[in-house]
Image 1 (cartoon, one colour):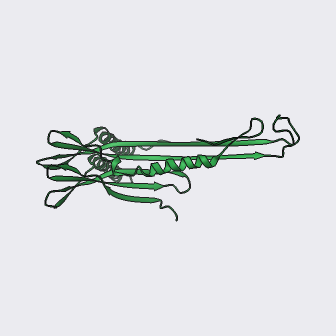
Image 2 (tube, chains in turn purple, yellow; image 1 turned 120 degrees about the horizontal axis):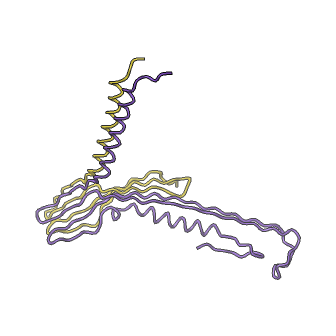
Image 3 (cartoon, chains in turn purple, blue; image 1 turned 90 degrees about the vertical axis):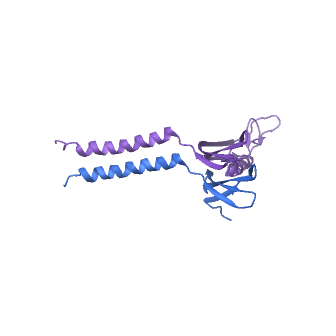
Length: 152
Length: 93
C-alpha cells in the first residue's frame, strides 16, 4: 500500500502521495454508497407475493494522513554505511481514520396480485426511549418548579 | 470546480415485476462533504415506491418512517410539556 523507499542506513521514507491516492479511492467508494441499492434489499418471494425490505442508513467517514522527510548532506560511504560528517536523516508519518455505519429498518413493501402496499416498521425501543426522555424533561421541570425556595 | 458541501439526490432502483405490475423503489440520499478534511456523511432513506400497471398508469405510494414520526411527536410533546410546566409554575420575581 505505501511505497517505502530505502534510504541510507535504516532510514525509510513513506511515499505520502500513494497514501493519499488510497484515501481518495476510499472516499470515492464512500461517496458511491449514496445509492438506492443501499436502501432497498433483495426482493423475497413468498408464493405469489414479493416482499422488499427498506432501511435507512447513515455512513460517517473521515480520515487524514501526513508525513515528512528530511535529510542533511552526507559525506560517508552509502554502500558500506560508514558514518561521515553531517549525517542526518529524519522522517515521520502518521494517519488515522474512522467511520460508523448505522442502519435501521423503516418499512416493508408487500407486492401481491391483490396490490402493492407499504407496511411501516416501528422500532419500539427507539420510540420508548424518546417517550422516556420527554417524560424525564417534563418531570424534571415539574420537580424543579415545585421545589421550595432554597434557604441561604 | 469546488465541491458542493451538501448534495441531495433522488434515485430509482431496478423495477420488481409482480404479475402485470412493476414496482419501482425510490430513495433519497443526502451527502455532506467536508471540504477541509477528507470525510463526509451519507444518509440514505427510502422515499416512495412507484407502482406501474400494464396500462402504463402510475401510482406513488410514500414510504412513511413511523419510528421517526413517533420520536419527533414524543420529543415535541416533551418540549412543549416542559415549557407549559414552566409557564404554569413560575413564580413572579
